[in-house]
Image 1 (cartoon, one colour):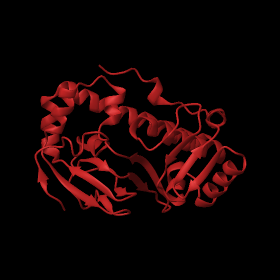
Image 2: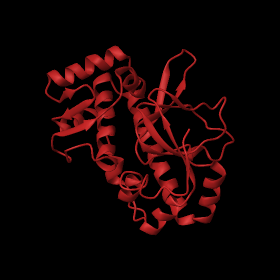
Image 3: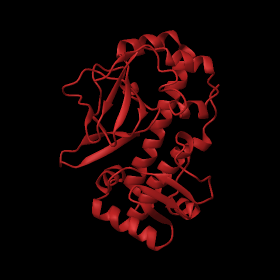
Length: 257
């Protein structure tokens, strides 16, 4: 499973972890160091392996050090709906701390390294650090708004604008949280998307066939290219925006202080 350590500092917090929190708020280094001070267990999980099984696991809380994961639900018809996509620095299970168990299953997309923090210690920490807890809850609310935007796109948009919305969601987040991109808004952007088409389909509420056809159409129309299997290059961000009506919530929030 891993070894227990006394701090996340240097190994998990800097530089990737909490990049989104630092970029979207005026959080102090002292607050980040306080967040880093909690004991944790360092664990590694292989791709496609379960991180959280709500039916069998106790309540869990993780910080993602490296890798991608996702939460989901299985519908009565057997179809899977993907909710949150977790990347470096994200907290998994934070929104579940008011419950006795996690609400949704979580599975690794790629090989992951995580800090497993005891939920009683996380609750105690939040009660002692009111200002920092407000930052974390604000980030959780932002994640919920982004998810609500995607659910609205799934309910109201046709496949092409729906896929455009999903790509723009990942692009806008990547600009905040990852060094693995080379573009700013309005420019060609290359970014990593380590997800199979079936998983993309479950994120966007489409079939894998529709995902394949839609991405092929985007390539043929010059909107995107795919230099490698999991590498996407977007050439016309404005057309994707016009097509989907996507709102970049990361650009429109009021900085927290």
